[in-house]
Length: 180
Image (cartoon, rainbow, N blue to C red):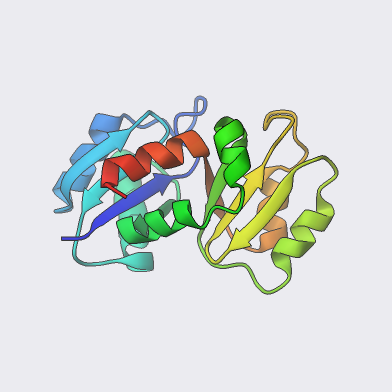
Protein backbone atom coordinates (compact mmCIF):
# COMPACT_ATOMS: atom_id res chain seq x y z
CA UNK A 1 0.00 0.00 0.00
CA UNK A 2 1.30 3.50 -0.82
CA UNK A 3 2.48 5.75 2.00
CA UNK A 4 0.68 9.07 2.54
CA UNK A 5 1.28 12.16 4.63
CA UNK A 6 -1.71 14.05 6.00
CA UNK A 7 -1.22 17.54 7.42
CA UNK A 8 -3.94 18.86 9.67
CA UNK A 9 -4.58 22.55 9.61
CA UNK A 10 -4.28 24.66 12.76
CA UNK A 11 -4.44 22.01 15.45
CA UNK A 12 -3.04 22.31 18.97
CA UNK A 13 -2.18 25.99 18.51
CA UNK A 14 -4.31 27.27 21.37
CA UNK A 15 -7.56 26.38 23.05
CA UNK A 16 -9.26 25.42 19.77
CA UNK A 17 -8.84 22.32 17.64
CA UNK A 18 -7.09 20.28 20.30
CA UNK A 19 -6.31 16.72 19.30
CA UNK A 20 -4.07 14.12 20.86
CA UNK A 21 -1.73 12.37 18.50
CA UNK A 22 -2.77 9.01 20.00
CA UNK A 23 -6.38 9.88 19.13
CA UNK A 24 -5.33 10.75 15.60
CA UNK A 25 -3.52 7.42 15.22
CA UNK A 26 -6.57 5.59 16.60
CA UNK A 27 -8.79 7.37 14.08
CA UNK A 28 -6.50 6.32 11.25
CA UNK A 29 -6.48 2.71 12.45
CA UNK A 30 -10.28 2.67 12.76
CA UNK A 31 -10.50 3.80 9.11
CA UNK A 32 -8.28 0.93 8.03
CA UNK A 33 -5.24 3.12 7.35
CA UNK A 34 -2.10 1.04 7.84
CA UNK A 35 0.80 1.76 10.17
CA UNK A 36 -0.33 5.21 11.33
CA UNK A 37 2.44 7.34 12.84
CA UNK A 38 2.46 10.95 13.96
CA UNK A 39 5.21 13.54 14.08
CA UNK A 40 5.27 16.35 16.63
CA UNK A 41 2.03 17.71 18.10
CA UNK A 42 1.10 19.89 15.13
CA UNK A 43 -1.00 17.39 13.21
CA UNK A 44 1.32 15.41 10.97
CA UNK A 45 0.06 11.90 10.21
CA UNK A 46 1.83 9.26 8.12
CA UNK A 47 0.03 6.08 7.07
CA UNK A 48 -0.39 3.48 4.33
CA UNK A 49 -3.53 3.38 2.23
CA UNK A 50 -4.61 2.09 -1.16
CA UNK A 51 -8.06 3.67 -1.58
CA UNK A 52 -9.47 6.27 -1.46
CA UNK A 53 -6.77 8.74 -2.46
CA UNK A 54 -6.47 12.47 -3.14
CA UNK A 55 -9.43 14.71 -2.41
CA UNK A 56 -11.64 11.72 -1.53
CA UNK A 57 -9.18 10.69 1.18
CA UNK A 58 -8.99 14.26 2.49
CA UNK A 59 -12.79 14.43 2.66
CA UNK A 60 -12.99 11.09 4.47
CA UNK A 61 -10.44 12.19 7.07
CA UNK A 62 -12.15 15.56 7.56
CA UNK A 63 -15.59 14.01 7.94
CA UNK A 64 -14.46 11.26 10.31
CA UNK A 65 -12.33 13.61 12.44
CA UNK A 66 -15.33 15.90 12.83
CA UNK A 67 -17.65 13.05 13.71
CA UNK A 68 -15.39 10.95 15.93
CA UNK A 69 -13.01 13.51 17.45
CA UNK A 70 -15.17 16.65 17.25
CA UNK A 71 -12.29 18.16 15.29
CA UNK A 72 -13.30 20.60 12.55
CA UNK A 73 -10.19 21.05 10.43
CA UNK A 74 -8.89 20.58 6.92
CA UNK A 75 -6.57 17.72 5.96
CA UNK A 76 -3.97 18.08 3.21
CA UNK A 77 -2.81 14.70 1.90
CA UNK A 78 0.24 13.97 -0.22
CA UNK A 79 1.76 10.65 -1.26
CA UNK A 80 5.36 9.79 -0.41
CA UNK A 81 6.46 10.37 -4.04
CA UNK A 82 4.67 13.73 -4.05
CA UNK A 83 6.49 14.63 -0.81
CA UNK A 84 9.81 13.65 -2.33
CA UNK A 85 9.06 15.94 -5.29
CA UNK A 86 8.18 18.75 -2.87
CA UNK A 87 11.60 18.43 -1.25
CA UNK A 88 13.43 18.15 -4.57
CA UNK A 89 11.61 21.09 -6.17
CA UNK A 90 12.26 23.53 -3.32
CA UNK A 91 13.32 26.76 -5.06
CA UNK A 92 15.02 28.05 -1.90
CA UNK A 93 17.84 25.57 -1.33
CA UNK A 94 20.25 28.14 0.10
CA UNK A 95 17.64 29.36 2.57
CA UNK A 96 16.79 25.75 3.49
CA UNK A 97 20.42 25.16 4.47
CA UNK A 98 20.96 28.53 6.15
CA UNK A 99 17.67 29.01 8.04
CA UNK A 100 15.20 26.12 7.62
CA UNK A 101 12.90 27.37 10.40
CA UNK A 102 12.05 30.45 8.32
CA UNK A 103 11.33 28.54 5.12
CA UNK A 104 7.71 27.37 5.04
CA UNK A 105 6.05 24.89 2.75
CA UNK A 106 2.37 25.61 2.18
CA UNK A 107 0.34 22.61 1.08
CA UNK A 108 -2.72 23.87 -0.75
CA UNK A 109 -6.11 22.28 -1.41
CA UNK A 110 -5.86 23.19 -5.09
CA UNK A 111 -3.34 24.72 -7.43
CA UNK A 112 -3.87 28.50 -7.53
CA UNK A 113 -5.12 30.03 -10.78
CA UNK A 114 -2.61 31.46 -13.22
CA UNK A 115 -1.03 34.66 -11.94
CA UNK A 116 -2.16 34.20 -8.31
CA UNK A 117 1.32 33.52 -6.92
CA UNK A 118 2.65 36.57 -8.72
CA UNK A 119 -0.21 38.66 -7.27
CA UNK A 120 0.65 37.35 -3.82
CA UNK A 121 4.32 38.25 -4.23
CA UNK A 122 3.27 41.74 -5.38
CA UNK A 123 1.14 42.10 -2.23
CA UNK A 124 4.10 41.38 0.07
CA UNK A 125 5.08 44.50 2.03
CA UNK A 126 8.10 42.98 3.77
CA UNK A 127 11.10 40.95 2.68
CA UNK A 128 9.20 37.67 2.28
CA UNK A 129 9.55 35.75 -0.96
CA UNK A 130 6.92 33.40 -2.40
CA UNK A 131 7.20 30.77 -5.12
CA UNK A 132 4.49 28.41 -6.27
CA UNK A 133 4.59 24.91 -7.67
CA UNK A 134 1.22 23.30 -8.35
CA UNK A 135 -0.56 22.55 -5.07
CA UNK A 136 2.40 23.87 -3.07
CA UNK A 137 3.88 27.23 -2.29
CA UNK A 138 7.22 27.95 -0.67
CA UNK A 139 7.64 31.08 1.45
CA UNK A 140 10.81 32.53 2.96
CA UNK A 141 10.23 34.68 6.04
CA UNK A 142 13.71 36.21 6.58
CA UNK A 143 12.51 38.40 9.46
CA UNK A 144 10.43 35.70 11.15
CA UNK A 145 6.91 34.43 10.72
CA UNK A 146 5.26 35.91 13.81
CA UNK A 147 5.83 39.55 12.88
CA UNK A 148 5.17 39.11 9.17
CA UNK A 149 2.29 40.85 7.46
CA UNK A 150 2.14 37.95 5.01
CA UNK A 151 -0.67 36.24 6.91
CA UNK A 152 -2.61 33.07 6.22
CA UNK A 153 -5.67 35.17 5.43
CA UNK A 154 -3.79 37.22 2.81
CA UNK A 155 -2.21 34.10 1.31
CA UNK A 156 -5.50 32.23 1.01
CA UNK A 157 -7.46 35.21 -0.24
CA UNK A 158 -4.89 35.94 -2.93
CA UNK A 159 -4.28 32.33 -3.97
CA UNK A 160 -7.98 31.48 -3.86
CA UNK A 161 -7.45 28.23 -1.96
CA UNK A 162 -6.92 26.97 1.60
CA UNK A 163 -3.55 25.84 2.84
CA UNK A 164 -1.50 24.76 5.79
CA UNK A 165 2.17 25.38 6.43
CA UNK A 166 5.13 23.48 7.85
CA UNK A 167 8.64 24.80 8.33
CA UNK A 168 11.43 23.15 6.41
CA UNK A 169 12.70 21.26 9.46
CA UNK A 170 9.33 19.50 9.71
CA UNK A 171 9.20 18.91 5.95
CA UNK A 172 12.53 17.08 6.13
CA UNK A 173 11.50 15.08 9.22
CA UNK A 174 8.38 13.92 7.37
CA UNK A 175 10.51 13.02 4.33
CA UNK A 176 12.72 10.90 6.55
CA UNK A 177 9.68 9.26 8.12
CA UNK A 178 8.35 8.13 4.73
CA UNK A 179 11.76 7.27 3.38
CA UNK A 180 11.89 9.98 0.71
